[in-house]
Image 1 (cartoon, rainbow, N blue to C red):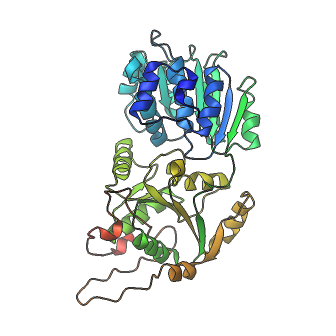
Image 2: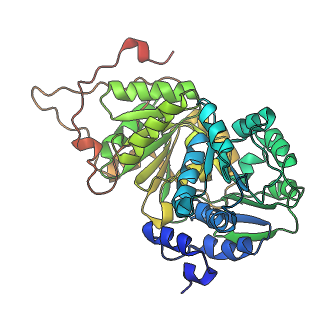
Image 3: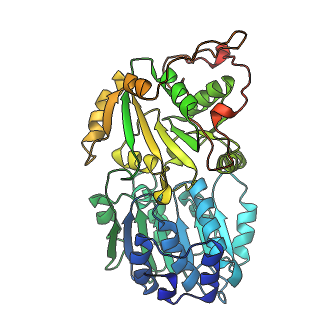
Length: 431
């Protein structure tokens, strides 16, 4: 059996892995590590939750020279949350070697970031916009860069991020080593990457456009206006683990979270309009299980690793099949149990047909009442004197509820939590 000792890693790296209770490389790590440690450019594709972060973090920890106080490794990611997560892994691997790391993301003052760069940060993790800001201001220089990583490469090279990423790459040394990682690497990504990689090695492990194979994915047809009550029923059924609900727009996510909170559900919203401090608080509460229901835009679809997410619910459909893959991949991480649920209203049919054309195996589709029967979810009889929750408003956008539950052992389920009196204010109803 392959172990990390096989790769002749530094004692500090092996000790850090032992402290994290990581003993055996995953398939993507076993395939990518020898190539990256040997200095090859690489395209790495593996399903979500397969350990891609460590596959590129270990080569960074191994190859950065602590004697040189300049940026030698740069990791570009699409979201602040993912940047924070990757930085945490790298810090755990490099603390013993006293390497300096700078986290460059928007939503916070640039002063502390500038100070970290001036202290001679050898490793930089950041989002393209803020990294480019520091390049333009002259605080960050990349001429000595040895290793460039594009995480979630399909998004990094897509139209939204591509111009900034191209400008950043242009500021780096042509002698750098470059690696791209993602769960989905369509042909156009490889074509674009060919401009920036030199004779790259391609590593594919469990690479498929189908969401995580061991995670059951059920698609339920709900009647027009029926998503709110279906979502609330799923929430009330949830017993263990946390729930991640995906919506489409910032305002819709915010509205849905308010409606659920008004009904007494322990919920928070994650969307791009929040300040960085607010986003950090939301994620900290979700990771700890203090808030077991997270309503999010696609900002949470990529790379986030929260091991107690027991279910993902697509309240609204994503734009692409790749995004569906990434959303579903937030549960069942590292082969843990999980489930995915997609709610389809009649108006979703054209978009769903478009997504199906890009999926190799369509998820099982069934009417909503079949789950209702299978789970024995008849409405409970009213107990005399008990308050009865009001139904959530039907209506457009996101006026609905979600399955929730905390996580592993020690985290109570939503149904066991004490809820506030259910009162839905008029101002929260969808227009």
